[in-house]
Amino acid sequence: MSRDFTDYLNDILSSIDEIFDFIGNMEYDPFSIRENQRYP
Image (cartoon, rainbow, N blue to C red; front, side):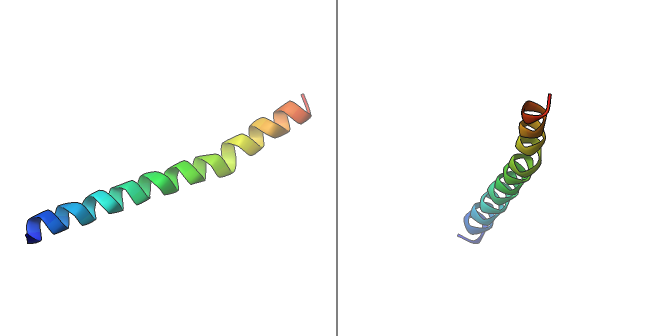
């Protein structure tokens, strides 16, 4: 039971890291792309 639970927690932590990485990319890349589109 404990091993399955720790694996479950590890999966959650890894997905949270991926989500934050995705949000971080969304925060920076699209703005620079929009600026390039507004001011070519």
